[in-house]
Image 1 (tube, rainbow, N blue to C red):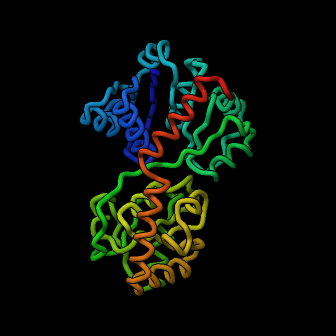
Image 2 (image 1 turned 180 degrees about the horizontal axis):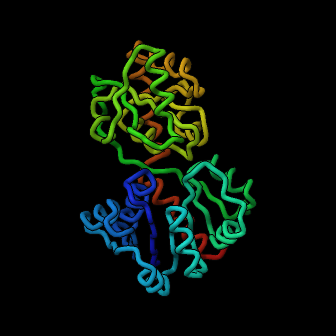
Length: 300
């Protein structure tokens, strides 16, 4: 099986990490997998640094590789467009965002071109079904994250540093003022989770929330918005607390966990166990492979 992965992201965000983890897992399992990423992108650099087959994304390169590929897997919206233009009959598209596809003629054409969608959550699957995609063409494949060392929980509460208006930076500032605490904005979650006492993850819309999964893998409890796929990632009251996007509710949840270390530790350990059961990289790779095999066998 020859797989061509296409990603156009300029930054190393959750989707790029998932593309990298999947590509590496396939290569290590002996599959013929190659990644195309944009010139100068951190994804391309990281893949090459790991010794993985990776080339600069250019249309002639994509067309050349598509001719001998069994599958093309597009990992973002622009990649979906480029892959659809190749006319390859077995196009797989990862759908990670929680907003509905546009209703334009162009968007409807793109939606029809994918043989299978891999939705990052049941929530995203529902969005695709509501947009008219047949249920047989949509599977749920949750993100997979590495199992990080357990946090010492001796450090501050942290939140991802974000400038995306759909994330909750302004809301977090309001909650800090209401609750009388400060949260460290992290530019390196893996490093900062080594001592974090709590993860605060706020969003107005979320496909799943891979940052939350990273926190859980480090046994760090989570306070997260009760929106989208976050309600699937976080087991409310068990691995963290889901809250309405209101400053008072967020402040109460943060102060509850920072004030009860035993509860926070218990939720952190439950989160780590949930990662082992549902959200490992191995689970993600195997579920993706199952979808590849189904598409190749023409059972759908």
